[in-house]
Image 1: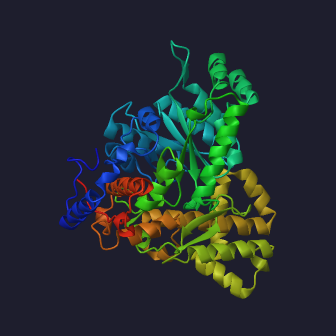
Image 2: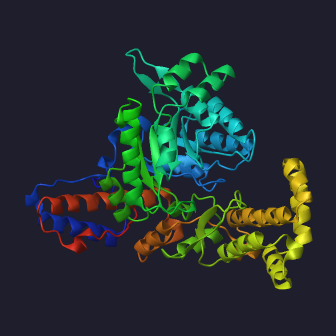
Image 3: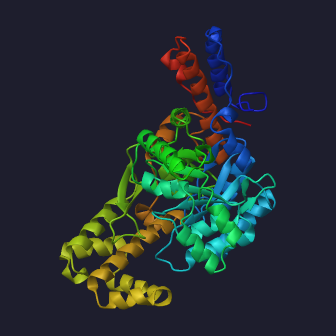
Length: 501
């Protein structure tokens, strides 16, 4: 277990620090609080169900930022890892699954992939579910769902089987990433009969599978997404967890379900041991990290992008328009420090709201647009038009008649490429990098400063996770002592990172 003989720091300073901390705790041993190990944090049914050592998830980061290598290293470290397959072509996703299987072996537990709701791409969601079921992907992290789709219900129900004792076994597990109770309730409840009937009529489910799906929640794991990078509602972690817990209690009562069949995890803002300990203390079944893993060596983000992240503070973030839902006003949280992306994206959104098209913009506004694009508007529209001719002719037909629509599509292209430039490390577009990032990244940097975990080359998903978990266990033990009536000095709660073997 962590904290025992097989989990020692490799740096003298950190080792001394830990010994000193243990010595301090010996003074309060009379309180009767024994060691607390990271394996003990969270819901033990979570680790048993998913085959992990720790109740800790390395979250999916879209378009391959959470690489197959990141998943492999996460699982080897005793964590649950999700492949960032959202937005990738099915063939690319398939290649990533093959890489994971080669690194872990077929039927390995503790890993899954991302299924993102994609109503703007007809057929994509179904193709990905087909692939996951064919390849035996046992876990999906479902994101961007505001309502249940037939495909997420199909994936959930396809893996249901009745055991000999009459209980229902899951072979396909849904982790539903949500930030609102009204969305969570849909995943906590059994699948709607209307969707199940349609799936059976289409031959996507058997009547037996549909019947089992009427008796269990769509998702056994609900990931509460607080103030995270990317798409976020900027929700505070505490109120979000209590809201989801209340929704679980009420939903289970309405549908006569065992509430213990629904585990609630927390992510968004977890970049220090204190934040991890707080999540577990609230009752989170597991924690999930995202932003901090983008700076890890296994990340699909370029070295240039990871260097920018390593310089970020907790306030070096901003909201800016999302490429996929630009016209609807949906925003994402991104890194602000070292880039102009957030400022440019927000100005583009204002221009779209107030102008009828590029020709309607003032000369200064046109200059801003073309400076940001790095080319003339006409050139950018020609490239956008060629892309739409192959991928979405109906949208192109509408845009050809609407200059305002053309403006939106060109802006969406810029926003999309911002993320691609960041992944590829396009040096000439450094100031246009779009890097999804929440405040956890800055908190992590402050905590790691001056420690062996500060250098980028030391930041692996294992080192990040084990430090967070070991620190959370340390804080939890001290809080247990304090709650038992022992006077624990505030400085004892400090935990500095080290490198673990």
